[in-house]
Length: 263
Image 1 (cartoon, rainbow, N blue to C red):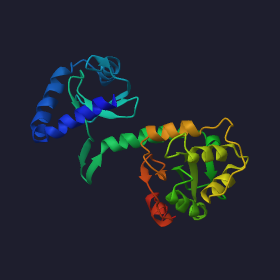
Image 2 (spheres, one colour; image 1 turned 180 degrees about the vertical axis):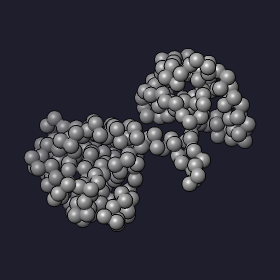
Image 3 (tube, rainbow, N blue to C red; image 1 turned 120 degrees about the horizontal axis):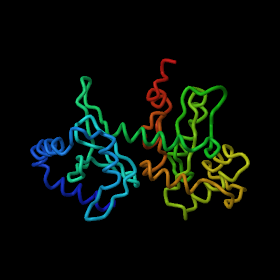
Image 4 (cartoon, helix red, strand yellow; image 1 turned 90 degrees about the vertical axis):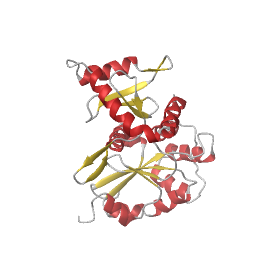
């Protein structure tokens, strides 16, 4: 299915000069195809059950209405998304923006953030490595990490300061080289340790861990989850609203991004 999306993207790039005219005509067509009595829920259900490409059913995970009449946001089980008219005869691949009074708003990215936040919220704290500090945190960030990543080590060095400033850090596993890598084994050892936070610090410092890697642990599941929510490298910091920030972020900047600078 990923190849299908790529084919649609390639075709669209080749025809960018025609997009504006085609889009206007397509929206008119979408409006004509929607019966007056049909509800958004009925259309969503229809697309969920009947959307096909080349005669093959598409693995649709979710369909939702957009602010544009007759245009629906389709999310596949792989996490890929695109836009469809009411009967699935026309697709658009790309981000949908609202031209708001205060500037352009990326509605597609907002939807991605909401989906990412919901997916991560389903992972209990007991399956994370938590650095919270003393007292109730003002904000919590989730960080996908790899112990062999230099910038992950650099970020980890700032965790005590983040905790002092009211930011809890919840680590999730993302071995960049995959589950057959040494990083994956080290992460499994971290999760199998009696004191995960201490083991995580030791791993970031390059120390050898004593714990076995053979316990029942969520490292593989978290790695797959990371890929599903768009993680491509580490560290990947996910803010409470689901927005993902790739790479190392200095404490002052992270505090500002979380809106805590005046607290």
